Length: 448
Image (cartoon, rainbow, N blue to C red; front, side, top):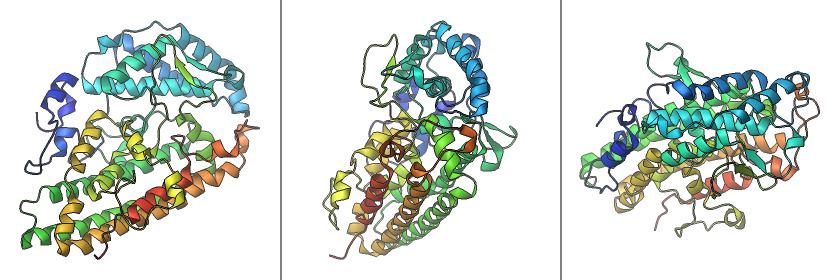
């Protein structure tokens, strides 16, 4: 059962093999939580397309890319495709309701189904013309029923997630070579823009750079007798390496505007990832009413950054008494945001983070003063990362909320400024990013 567990096992077998709890006396291994030593939270191989009666969904997704535009798009291309888009939606409404139980319990198959069905969901909802978006948005039974069934099996929300669009949405350029940034091609690009593709590649670059970080974290939490001089020296070296990796992650996101055009990202790509909202809530036809998480995909769902927070014990929830005290703005932010983002992650990755969080590395550093400087260097590097993240959020969302859409989209119908300055998961960008930065600052250990 070691190695890449999920490549061949079913859910029942995997869940039985995964340790529900672990103590600090047990070795901590990401392998048991679907974390690959070479590819991290990415699967080492792309998910295979569905076959048989489920190929209907695959074909529908391929067709969608050629005929659908955002429902608010008033450009010439959108106008020319309007009739084709309505035909696509009518065909989807007339599909048979395929029994998702026939997919079986193989994790990779279910993940592929979730990816395909959620892409279909977002194509369907966000291509609807404004005249059809009054009050509730009804998700047709042929899509709603299997999507909810698959999502419940995977313990994921029935909506597009970061895992769907970044971790599971790619294929090899050369199948004979291993996964790397230069050997992957993103498949489903809602807007068809280079900017959207480059956003996925930027996210992938951060995820793959994060693999080095995950290895370092695993080494530190598994150090035997961590208070010996040799162990302290090794942990110091690992903290130094971690600073280097975080600095490289900071460069990756800091250079986002070199390949991702802020205006195109905001108006043409980002709306496809949005979830349900109070003005037009989504209703899943043929499914018993339930309080699903329907926030939509967000980079805040990346398990890599959550792993770093868990390792350093960053207190986003303001549950600890730390200095300086949270500002009034910090307290107004959604202190449960990061916790909510975990609900959109694959079950295995949530379990990984939960176990990592129990390792109490910050407590170790408090007991061993010789580690404090290096730990604080690492926290400071993460704080710098979040400073840059605030700048990127301002450029890509807050500033663009005041901009006009690309000329190619014509006279787009726009929401009010408050809604337009929220992130891809429907969250207020400025307040959340500053709260995250300030929580990181409070993680620094101060002289007593």
